[in-house]
Length: 223
Ligand SMILES: [Fe+2]
Image 1 (cartoon, rainbow, N blue to C red):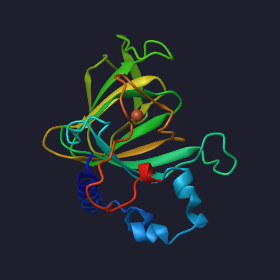
Image 2: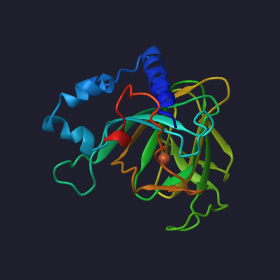
Image 3: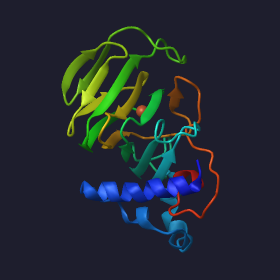
Image 4: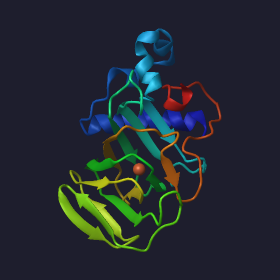
């Protein structure tokens, strides 16, 4: 991705979150100069990978395959310094912008439609742990406290306010239904984007960045 495109998406995200009444913590708005003015007291932000995260999964077509995220809180698995066992993110899926099929080895996450349009999921069980294959068995999961069963690959649509729980080894892809962007929440166990994501089709989690202009905001990948 070009840095200019990332800058544009972060500016648009700040406006979108604000329009839906969602407030980000102060460090979301620091300029690169303000980051440079801080020292070891903000080590947790770096070590727990808090902050902006814009990805095109290395595909170069962000508005079709991509996701904008902001990690608000997180820990580090096995760390005594950062024992927080939970994480929270706020994200944006633009109309028909897909987060590609993946599952998690360890993380359990609730994905929440926090507002905007409708959020569409496609779900599959993992054929067996350690493999990338999708099973053709019905998927059993919980939607806001209610146990439901969906057919593999069938569309499950969440309206604003609704959420589902994705347990480890449950493959999922999602996108905002055509016509309206969605603000998405994630509440999960501790998050490790460098080791925990298993993509059905192998690809990058973080983008390759072409530095065509100065960064507007620092991102997790810049730390
Ligand atoms: Fe996920």
